[in-house]
Length: 554
Image 1 (cartoon, rainbow, N blue to C red):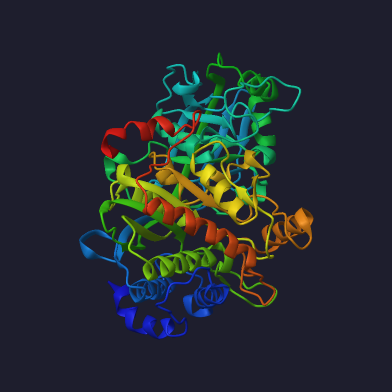
Image 2: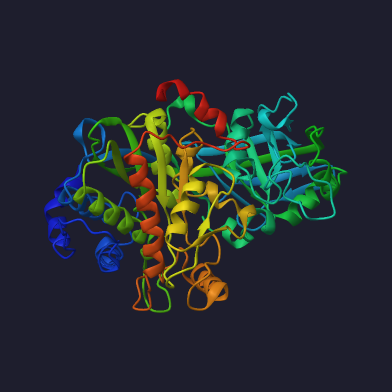
């Protein structure tokens, strides 16, 4: 394996980031900066999975964890978990259209539709498939909701609305009242909808794009350019969906009108539990699209601090090491989209937390430090781990994930992502109070950030989670208040998010990031030295999943 040939070279890199064996009560911003500047340097080529940049990243991280005195956390004494990925890219379509009673509606990739596939086929082909509108496409027995009503959708193309049936809360329109108001539930995420389409046996799945409901514009929806990634699956586990993606709102309105239907009216009807799927009479979908596909092997890095008395119980910290690799030069000629903040800073936080824990008394429970691959490709490294856990998920106490931290200075608050989901939010509030801070809920919960980071694959399998994400809401900064916090978010997300300018700069002020890292360090340390099992709150879609394994924790 190429990655292990880079370990000696990585040792030289480690020398540039000194390790102190003595325990330190605080997180050191100087060490954070050194780690970020190393990982975001051109030497690592943007840290894209399956590249030379990955080899160097893995070697560097293994050397850093080993230097801290941690043990390999993977299977069979390995530092890494092999993650086989499927990479697909659609070529120019030969056929792509809706056939309607009023004539063909031509579709243009990245024009009025954006499609991709996660099947390893040479051709994505759909011939004359019926088209069915399924509203929000939610099947949630615990909420008394089923948009499918037993309708046979095998071999059909299904059309969804984005978000969930309560998204219109606050508007003067009917809402379901079962999905948390404006706060998105998992059922509102496009990932859920594609998964549900496969469970229903559909051959195609299209979500009607809406900027407010999706949380991003059409330009973002089409940004992948027909590429997609998935973990490599066994033939019997492959999705039935040959093509999935987004349908631009004007095209959707025209399509429904051609079938004699009013999309706006049906959207309102879909907010009722009595909604039933509606076939678009006389409408068929045709597609004949060549597909290029390959397997790419990537790796999660797993390090372990074994527990002294209950090593089979584990507290997990996570951050993703991957970024976007090389791209077109920006205005300054930079080609590497190296993700200094997203998420080299999160990885640096893991190393700092690990440094503190290894320097102190051994905890009772084991602590796992996971540097995930392929987060930017759809949380795939953490998804692969959750599907193939090295440490049993029922004995995983919690996952504490760090993905982007604010770099604008000390704050009077900490932003909570996923309010009302789990009991760890109470721990966050308590620890923040000891720092002289309060908890502020994320500012746009309808965007579903809770479902968009590496903790989530474990959450949907029941593991309690806590996410620290610096772009979830405007921090009330000590210098400049919430207005300054919002200005930082606007600059970062508007200019540098997933771009080459997500680079370390001398204007970084990590004092606020240190506050957040310290809070996560305290919470994890407490859990690792206790017998407590955090859980999910009433109303969470993950509560019943965790409770099903309660007997394993007695």
